[in-house]
Image (tube, rainbow, N blue to C red; front, side):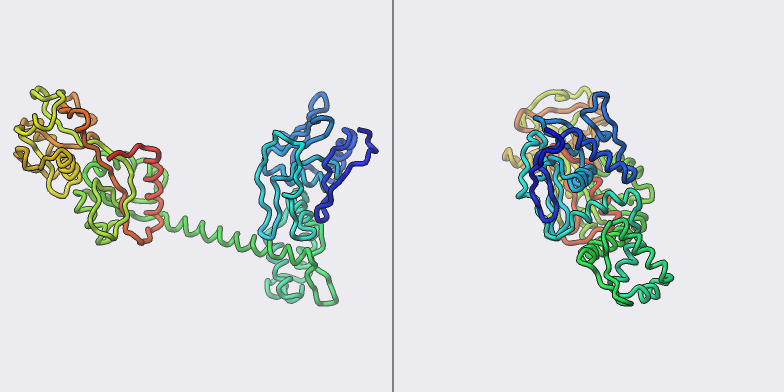
Length: 447
């Protein structure tokens, strides 16, 4: 295409975008014009053949079916492409990914498989000149950055309608206030105030920009406040509770990782059976709990966390060690159980119930208050034990053996993360709550 060829353009609220491209000569002139204005946001590196041009992974310029097309590689490069379009009006740019509205600038990267399609209907401007201001905020600021103090000064002048009164309120000399506003106008490339004697009024662009400036200042303060609260609150102690299995065999390993992430937090872990721990939660003595059964109270929220298997163990050399048996074969065997209130015992009783059996159908020789006691009783030959597979993972084959149940007779149960329903967790407890959910994310839950 000759360089003097006419390029059809679509006006879009003051911004003209060419749907067809100009010649390579025009492309080169456009790049030179941009570079003549000062340092480009990203260094331009032409290839040995002159095409394609690349802005170090940010922008790719290629010839597609005789047209020059610019491809944005990421969000950072989008304003640069639009700036080219505004200055030279020679670029073929896909616009379906950009929308400017009263709520701000919304961008979603498009599929670049079909650069020939440019649906201008998806590109709307609700404020005259808004595009120009956005371009200049992102690009002219590479030469002179906007500063927070300039925005604060601008907003104060806009609110008071006077440079002198604004200077008094923010304790600056009036020439300093005027200089800051003038510097901001240079950065944006637009006039923000009409000066009528001592009275100053916002221009249309100034009125629009004021809304964004206030939003920036509010967001800055919110960020400062949030970080201060975050830093101040993530210290101290978290009180949590756990039933025996998670408290003795799961949490100790996790607490090491949590301590590395949050060294200023101390975890106070209370261990008991599930009923005891849920009672502590109801009394608000702990903020979070991990238990092997759901309580009956309505004031607790339960989140499934992970699952285990409740298994039968025997001492090495026992006639049933390593064997696969059914429940009927086990009726005459001596058993060691956990105490009432234990989640492990509850899961075992529920498994029996599904087979039409009750706990009293077995020969119970001892009831013990901890899993460790059950294991020691089994090793001593007192009877078969009912434990979580997590509790004997390192001991099976070394003094203890599993008595396997026939297919379909196995028992699995869910461990629950419990917290008071409607109760607000402290910031440290919130962090630990999120940490637990991340730690068990994707783990299969059965039972």
